[in-house]
Image (cartoon, rainbow, N blue to C red; front, top):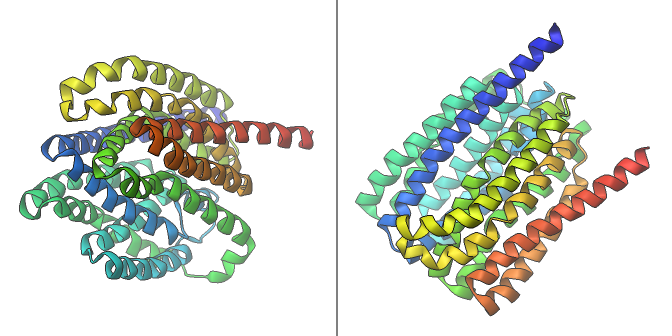
Length: 383
């Protein structure tokens, strides 16, 4: 009976998490795709360049990253306040440094927004408080639309960045309450320092993987190519939505000892169908909805293949993170980042946007193959 109840609760949690992420991603998708239609391609590249700076800066100081917070919250290890304090201290230094270098207060504020959102949402998932997760995430998405569009019409593209930063303000309330509920005790960090350090290293490398391409493309190919590439990435992220939803769910489940192998296999199969559909359907939709981005069509078709390899990698992430054995992921992510950088520099300069698309698929495939081979070897050694 207990097992049956746990399964029912688990399915409700998955559906709740999935529904929230779907609605949230739909709101975010329409916002960014609408922004792409009201500003030119070069400005779209500029906005995402600034967002990339904030994203990388926040990732570098995110000691209490999402995977660490989710795992510790699921295991009921009271480390949240200690990790939050360290992260906010480092975040303050990062925000000040970014302001001095780029003289852009909106980007500095967005760094704090990313820190608040990442830590609080991870804590809610780890504790399986899916209703709370829904409220916070959907509120943030709605505020992004309201403030992002409103401030854009007042101060231009920097208003989009400022609106995005303001949308994370409600998370500050939960953060303050968490400080009150959980005692700051740095001595609790010591038994888990290896997991925290290796996970932090992985997340930093992952942050570079997700945003360094934007910073490299600009000096090599310009803001216009970045605008086309970024729109392609955002469409791919929509197609990756189901895979990311399942990852968030199975991470807390794996941390609790529930492996869900069948769910992982179904997710990979579904991702393959989505990738194939993307190759044939996207070329028909872009000229209708985004006529300024028709040059991105060949890149989109290529990048759709990356959905499969990225989903395969996610299933390995969950297993390794939940067992606090994430060192192998540092190697896999490093290989991915290195291959991505080399791909953009070599293929990007040779073939332009299409070359960048090839580097996207190549880097994600290299990581998936590495994780598969390494996982098989680890399994054989355990046997």
